[in-house]
Length: 318
Image (tube, rainbow, N blue to C red; front, side, top):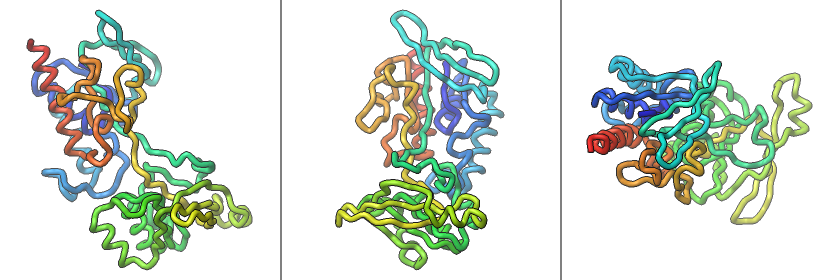
Protein backbone atom coordinates (compact mmCIF):
# COMPACT_ATOMS: atom_id res chain seq x y z
CA UNK A 1 0.00 0.00 0.00
CA UNK A 2 1.24 3.47 -0.85
CA UNK A 3 0.31 6.52 1.23
CA UNK A 4 0.85 10.01 -0.21
CA UNK A 5 1.16 12.73 2.40
CA UNK A 6 2.82 12.90 5.81
CA UNK A 7 0.32 15.04 7.70
CA UNK A 8 -1.92 13.73 10.49
CA UNK A 9 -4.17 11.73 8.14
CA UNK A 10 -1.26 10.05 6.37
CA UNK A 11 0.58 9.35 9.62
CA UNK A 12 -2.57 7.81 11.07
CA UNK A 13 -2.88 5.58 8.00
CA UNK A 14 0.76 4.46 8.27
CA UNK A 15 0.34 3.73 11.97
CA UNK A 16 -2.78 1.66 11.28
CA UNK A 17 -0.95 -0.27 8.54
CA UNK A 18 1.90 -1.16 10.86
CA UNK A 19 -0.53 -2.14 13.61
CA UNK A 20 -2.31 -4.52 11.25
CA UNK A 21 0.92 -5.89 9.79
CA UNK A 22 0.29 -4.46 6.30
CA UNK A 23 3.16 -3.62 3.96
CA UNK A 24 3.16 0.09 3.28
CA UNK A 25 5.22 3.11 2.33
CA UNK A 26 4.38 6.71 3.15
CA UNK A 27 5.78 9.48 0.94
CA UNK A 28 6.08 13.08 2.13
CA UNK A 29 7.08 15.79 -0.33
CA UNK A 30 8.75 18.07 2.22
CA UNK A 31 11.76 17.41 4.41
CA UNK A 32 9.76 16.58 7.55
CA UNK A 33 6.60 14.82 8.59
CA UNK A 34 3.67 16.63 10.15
CA UNK A 35 1.85 18.53 7.43
CA UNK A 36 0.25 21.76 8.68
CA UNK A 37 1.41 20.93 12.22
CA UNK A 38 4.91 21.81 11.01
CA UNK A 39 4.15 25.48 10.38
CA UNK A 40 1.11 26.49 12.40
CA UNK A 41 1.53 27.88 15.91
CA UNK A 42 -1.99 28.43 17.25
CA UNK A 43 -2.87 26.29 20.27
CA UNK A 44 -4.82 23.16 19.37
CA UNK A 45 -8.26 22.85 20.91
CA UNK A 46 -10.81 20.05 20.84
CA UNK A 47 -8.51 17.08 20.18
CA UNK A 48 -8.67 14.37 22.83
CA UNK A 49 -5.40 13.90 24.77
CA UNK A 50 -3.79 16.88 23.02
CA UNK A 51 -6.13 19.70 23.99
CA UNK A 52 -4.46 23.06 24.61
CA UNK A 53 -1.12 21.88 23.24
CA UNK A 54 1.02 23.56 20.61
CA UNK A 55 1.04 22.13 17.06
CA UNK A 56 4.77 21.48 17.43
CA UNK A 57 4.18 19.32 20.51
CA UNK A 58 1.38 17.36 18.83
CA UNK A 59 3.46 16.92 15.69
CA UNK A 60 6.32 15.48 17.75
CA UNK A 61 3.93 13.03 19.43
CA UNK A 62 2.70 11.84 16.03
CA UNK A 63 6.18 11.52 14.52
CA UNK A 64 7.53 9.71 17.58
CA UNK A 65 4.61 7.30 17.42
CA UNK A 66 5.14 6.30 13.77
CA UNK A 67 8.91 6.06 14.20
CA UNK A 68 8.65 3.95 17.36
CA UNK A 69 6.03 1.76 15.68
CA UNK A 70 8.41 1.06 12.80
CA UNK A 71 6.30 2.63 10.04
CA UNK A 72 7.93 2.89 6.62
CA UNK A 73 8.26 6.39 5.17
CA UNK A 74 10.39 8.60 2.95
CA UNK A 75 10.61 12.39 3.09
CA UNK A 76 11.53 14.87 0.33
CA UNK A 77 9.80 12.60 -2.19
CA UNK A 78 6.98 14.31 -4.05
CA UNK A 79 4.25 12.46 -5.96
CA UNK A 80 3.89 14.01 -9.42
CA UNK A 81 1.32 11.85 -11.21
CA UNK A 82 -1.06 8.93 -10.65
CA UNK A 83 -1.45 6.57 -13.60
CA UNK A 84 -4.36 4.13 -13.66
CA UNK A 85 -5.67 1.74 -16.29
CA UNK A 86 -7.68 -1.42 -16.75
CA UNK A 87 -6.12 -4.63 -15.42
CA UNK A 88 -2.94 -2.97 -14.26
CA UNK A 89 -1.64 -1.86 -10.86
CA UNK A 90 -1.71 1.79 -9.87
CA UNK A 91 1.48 3.61 -10.79
CA UNK A 92 2.64 6.75 -9.02
CA UNK A 93 5.39 8.84 -10.58
CA UNK A 94 7.50 10.39 -7.81
CA UNK A 95 10.46 12.71 -7.74
CA UNK A 96 13.05 12.71 -5.00
CA UNK A 97 16.01 15.01 -4.46
CA UNK A 98 18.10 13.32 -7.14
CA UNK A 99 15.87 11.10 -9.29
CA UNK A 100 12.43 10.34 -10.61
CA UNK A 101 10.97 6.86 -10.34
CA UNK A 102 7.72 4.92 -10.70
CA UNK A 103 6.13 3.10 -7.76
CA UNK A 104 3.37 0.55 -8.30
CA UNK A 105 0.85 -0.44 -5.65
CA UNK A 106 -2.37 -2.42 -5.21
CA UNK A 107 -3.99 0.21 -3.02
CA UNK A 108 -3.31 3.93 -2.80
CA UNK A 109 -4.24 6.36 -0.03
CA UNK A 110 -3.99 10.04 -0.92
CA UNK A 111 -3.66 12.37 2.07
CA UNK A 112 -2.37 15.41 0.22
CA UNK A 113 -3.80 17.90 2.71
CA UNK A 114 -4.64 21.48 1.90
CA UNK A 115 -2.98 24.48 0.34
CA UNK A 116 -3.46 28.15 1.11
CA UNK A 117 -6.34 29.84 -0.69
CA UNK A 118 -5.43 32.84 -2.81
CA UNK A 119 -7.21 36.15 -3.11
CA UNK A 120 -6.70 36.12 -6.86
CA UNK A 121 -5.99 39.87 -7.05
CA UNK A 122 -3.05 41.89 -8.40
CA UNK A 123 -0.27 42.41 -5.89
CA UNK A 124 -0.96 39.30 -3.85
CA UNK A 125 2.66 38.17 -4.20
CA UNK A 126 4.26 41.40 -2.95
CA UNK A 127 6.74 40.87 -0.07
CA UNK A 128 4.53 42.87 2.30
CA UNK A 129 1.80 40.23 1.94
CA UNK A 130 2.08 37.34 4.40
CA UNK A 131 0.36 34.04 3.57
CA UNK A 132 -1.02 31.10 5.53
CA UNK A 133 2.37 29.73 6.62
CA UNK A 134 3.33 32.99 8.34
CA UNK A 135 2.65 32.89 12.07
CA UNK A 136 1.34 36.12 13.58
CA UNK A 137 1.39 34.35 16.95
CA UNK A 138 5.13 33.79 16.71
CA UNK A 139 6.12 37.03 14.97
CA UNK A 140 3.59 39.54 16.31
CA UNK A 141 6.38 41.79 17.66
CA UNK A 142 7.33 42.61 14.07
CA UNK A 143 4.12 44.62 13.77
CA UNK A 144 4.65 46.92 16.75
CA UNK A 145 3.82 50.47 15.70
CA UNK A 146 2.71 49.34 12.23
CA UNK A 147 -0.57 49.45 10.38
CA UNK A 148 -1.61 45.91 9.49
CA UNK A 149 -4.50 44.62 7.39
CA UNK A 150 -5.72 41.11 8.27
CA UNK A 151 -7.94 39.54 5.61
CA UNK A 152 -10.44 36.86 6.68
CA UNK A 153 -13.20 36.04 9.12
CA UNK A 154 -12.33 32.71 10.72
CA UNK A 155 -10.45 31.69 13.87
CA UNK A 156 -6.98 32.36 12.46
CA UNK A 157 -8.00 35.77 11.12
CA UNK A 158 -9.40 37.03 14.41
CA UNK A 159 -6.64 35.43 16.44
CA UNK A 160 -4.00 37.01 14.20
CA UNK A 161 -5.67 40.42 14.40
CA UNK A 162 -5.77 40.20 18.19
CA UNK A 163 -2.11 39.15 18.49
CA UNK A 164 -0.98 41.98 16.20
CA UNK A 165 -3.09 44.54 18.07
CA UNK A 166 -1.85 43.32 21.46
CA UNK A 167 1.71 43.74 20.15
CA UNK A 168 1.04 47.40 19.39
CA UNK A 169 -0.21 47.39 15.79
CA UNK A 170 -3.15 49.32 14.38
CA UNK A 171 -5.18 46.57 12.70
CA UNK A 172 -7.81 46.60 9.98
CA UNK A 173 -9.74 43.32 10.00
CA UNK A 174 -11.29 42.98 6.56
CA UNK A 175 -13.90 40.33 5.83
CA UNK A 176 -16.05 39.88 2.75
CA UNK A 177 -18.97 38.45 4.74
CA UNK A 178 -21.58 40.12 6.94
CA UNK A 179 -20.38 38.29 10.06
CA UNK A 180 -17.42 36.32 11.31
CA UNK A 181 -17.30 32.52 11.36
CA UNK A 182 -14.72 32.47 14.18
CA UNK A 183 -15.37 30.98 17.60
CA UNK A 184 -17.23 33.12 20.13
CA UNK A 185 -14.14 33.52 22.32
CA UNK A 186 -12.35 35.39 19.54
CA UNK A 187 -15.37 37.52 18.68
CA UNK A 188 -15.76 38.50 22.32
CA UNK A 189 -12.07 39.39 22.64
CA UNK A 190 -12.34 41.49 19.49
CA UNK A 191 -14.97 43.72 21.12
CA UNK A 192 -12.49 44.52 23.90
CA UNK A 193 -9.63 45.47 21.58
CA UNK A 194 -9.93 49.12 20.42
CA UNK A 195 -6.92 48.88 18.11
CA UNK A 196 -8.79 46.63 15.67
CA UNK A 197 -10.99 48.33 13.09
CA UNK A 198 -13.56 45.88 11.69
CA UNK A 199 -14.56 46.19 8.03
CA UNK A 200 -17.32 43.72 7.10
CA UNK A 201 -18.87 43.15 3.66
CA UNK A 202 -15.58 44.32 2.20
CA UNK A 203 -13.27 42.69 -0.34
CA UNK A 204 -9.76 43.50 -1.52
CA UNK A 205 -9.72 44.39 -5.23
CA UNK A 206 -5.97 44.96 -5.56
CA UNK A 207 -2.71 45.45 -3.65
CA UNK A 208 0.06 47.72 -4.90
CA UNK A 209 3.17 49.50 -3.68
CA UNK A 210 2.21 52.94 -2.44
CA UNK A 211 4.05 56.15 -3.28
CA UNK A 212 4.49 56.69 0.46
CA UNK A 213 6.09 53.28 0.69
CA UNK A 214 8.54 54.09 -2.09
CA UNK A 215 9.59 57.28 -0.28
CA UNK A 216 10.13 55.38 2.96
CA UNK A 217 12.20 52.60 1.48
CA UNK A 218 15.29 53.65 3.47
CA UNK A 219 13.39 53.20 6.78
CA UNK A 220 11.35 50.21 5.75
CA UNK A 221 13.00 48.09 3.10
CA UNK A 222 9.67 46.75 1.88
CA UNK A 223 7.76 50.04 2.06
CA UNK A 224 4.01 50.32 2.48
CA UNK A 225 1.26 49.03 0.25
CA UNK A 226 -2.05 50.43 -0.95
CA UNK A 227 -5.19 48.35 -0.68
CA UNK A 228 -8.09 49.05 -3.00
CA UNK A 229 -11.24 47.93 -1.18
CA UNK A 230 -14.82 47.38 -2.30
CA UNK A 231 -17.74 47.59 0.12
CA UNK A 232 -20.47 45.27 -1.18
CA UNK A 233 -23.33 46.89 0.74
CA UNK A 234 -22.63 50.46 -0.30
CA UNK A 235 -21.03 49.68 -3.65
CA UNK A 236 -18.22 52.10 -2.84
CA UNK A 237 -14.46 51.79 -3.37
CA UNK A 238 -11.85 53.07 -0.95
CA UNK A 239 -8.10 52.95 -0.46
CA UNK A 240 -6.01 52.22 2.62
CA UNK A 241 -2.25 52.47 3.15
CA UNK A 242 -0.78 49.74 5.36
CA UNK A 243 2.62 48.39 6.31
CA UNK A 244 1.66 44.73 5.96
CA UNK A 245 -1.15 42.47 4.80
CA UNK A 246 -1.82 39.13 6.50
CA UNK A 247 -3.95 36.66 4.54
CA UNK A 248 -6.17 34.44 6.66
CA UNK A 249 -8.68 33.33 4.03
CA UNK A 250 -8.48 29.64 4.76
CA UNK A 251 -7.15 26.56 3.04
CA UNK A 252 -8.30 24.70 -0.06
CA UNK A 253 -8.06 20.91 -0.57
CA UNK A 254 -4.99 20.00 -2.61
CA UNK A 255 -6.60 17.59 -5.06
CA UNK A 256 -4.23 18.18 -7.98
CA UNK A 257 -3.01 14.58 -8.04
CA UNK A 258 -6.51 13.16 -8.33
CA UNK A 259 -7.79 15.44 -11.08
CA UNK A 260 -8.81 13.23 -13.98
CA UNK A 261 -8.40 10.13 -11.79
CA UNK A 262 -11.33 10.47 -9.38
CA UNK A 263 -14.54 12.48 -9.33
CA UNK A 264 -14.69 15.80 -7.46
CA UNK A 265 -17.43 17.53 -5.48
CA UNK A 266 -18.57 21.07 -6.21
CA UNK A 267 -16.47 22.32 -3.27
CA UNK A 268 -13.35 20.73 -4.86
CA UNK A 269 -13.10 17.94 -2.29
CA UNK A 270 -12.87 14.36 -3.57
CA UNK A 271 -16.03 12.28 -3.87
CA UNK A 272 -15.77 9.30 -1.49
CA UNK A 273 -18.06 6.70 0.03
CA UNK A 274 -18.32 6.14 3.78
CA UNK A 275 -15.11 4.08 3.71
CA UNK A 276 -13.17 6.92 1.98
CA UNK A 277 -12.98 5.10 -1.35
CA UNK A 278 -12.94 7.39 -4.35
CA UNK A 279 -14.68 6.62 -7.65
CA UNK A 280 -11.61 4.49 -8.37
CA UNK A 281 -12.16 1.64 -5.91
CA UNK A 282 -8.45 1.05 -5.23
CA UNK A 283 -7.75 4.69 -4.41
CA UNK A 284 -8.76 6.28 -1.10
CA UNK A 285 -8.85 9.98 -0.25
CA UNK A 286 -8.50 11.01 3.39
CA UNK A 287 -8.07 14.12 5.50
CA UNK A 288 -8.63 17.63 4.18
CA UNK A 289 -9.07 16.56 0.55
CA UNK A 290 -12.15 14.52 1.52
CA UNK A 291 -13.60 16.81 4.21
CA UNK A 292 -15.84 19.90 3.84
CA UNK A 293 -14.03 23.03 5.03
CA UNK A 294 -16.27 23.51 8.08
CA UNK A 295 -15.38 20.02 9.36
CA UNK A 296 -11.62 19.88 8.78
CA UNK A 297 -9.83 19.07 12.01
CA UNK A 298 -7.08 17.00 13.53
CA UNK A 299 -9.64 14.54 14.89
CA UNK A 300 -11.26 13.98 11.49
CA UNK A 301 -7.90 13.52 9.76
CA UNK A 302 -6.74 10.90 12.26
CA UNK A 303 -10.00 8.97 12.09
CA UNK A 304 -9.90 8.96 8.28
CA UNK A 305 -6.49 7.29 8.25
CA UNK A 306 -7.61 4.48 10.52
CA UNK A 307 -10.93 3.94 8.72
CA UNK A 308 -9.41 3.75 5.23
CA UNK A 309 -6.73 1.26 6.27
CA UNK A 310 -9.18 -0.99 8.10
CA UNK A 311 -11.44 -1.06 5.05
CA UNK A 312 -8.50 -1.90 2.80
CA UNK A 313 -7.52 -4.71 5.18
CA UNK A 314 -11.07 -6.03 4.94
CA UNK A 315 -11.13 -5.94 1.12
CA UNK A 316 -7.72 -7.58 0.83
CA UNK A 317 -8.90 -10.27 3.21
CA UNK A 318 -11.70 -11.12 0.80
